[in-house]
View 1 (cartoon, helix red, strand yellow):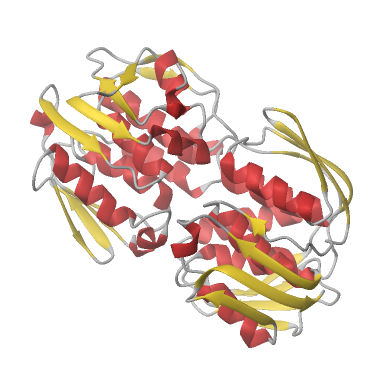
View 2 (spheres, rainbow, N blue to C red; view 1 turned 90 degrees about the horizontal axis):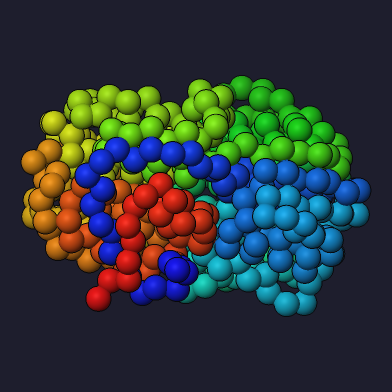
Length: 422
């Protein structure tokens, strides 16, 4: 059954423990960073353990438009051959709803001589990018966007107009990551300073720096929130992508909800991605703490919130304001869809949400068609509720192709019964 083509999937509760073994997809965050840096390098890089999904395919296609030879030789391996210089492209770079690719390539367009247009689908055209374009404009770059959102038009001389760049890191760490990665390929060293040094998503900056260094960049953190990026360029590498921690969160939660054991072949403590921190929190279920600071594991919050619905006591997730500018307003989406399962199950404030746990929901029948807002994480997390509550259907299940195309197949392989909802 091709689950991705269904308009809705019905989840049949699984009253026994989910047991089995799965191979996680590669990290989306790391794959897209590695693809870009391999594209900026001179020579051929082999990226293994990579994610093959909509987001990474958009990045690969855009790099091809910019003169980089990108070949996907298997489901988990890319060969990338660059010249060390991106070429101009007459056609817009279409990136769907891939936020990482859109932000990263907007900054990389500084390295292209001439005009580059970065665009996306209807959802991407509603996602803010002004924090990055304002930075480019302050540097003296000719850039225009549509009311703070894509499409973005950048006209550059092929290098940074200034050697000192201030980036607003308050809304998204991707703006800072984008500038840092492009800076190493500049013709002169660049000092990059973030206006908000207490980054909620510092973990993703650390990932960016690690991938940069793996591809030969020399970057030194001068002080908290300030980096000196040498103009080393990048060197082609054989690079191994680690498994996706965000994907793992759904399976860790499925274990806890059903009392099962799903072997993923990876130690959560060995993962460098921020969402790996969610594992320790999940191990406390059904006695998760009353307050959870979600700033360092933001993509795991939908999973944790669904798990919290069945906790013994209420859980408040704090410092998650950035979730309002993801693929959808995730705070609002989580609250709206949890309240379909039980009215009043969740409430929200601007930067936090509270799940008013009700463990008695386990085993009940609560007819709810979950609207996913074209957001892969809403679809995958709310499917977990269907493991223990009857009547749960997931609308637009195909949206998981953004980062985890095999999600439904993997659940089915574990014994979860999925069917086309009527």
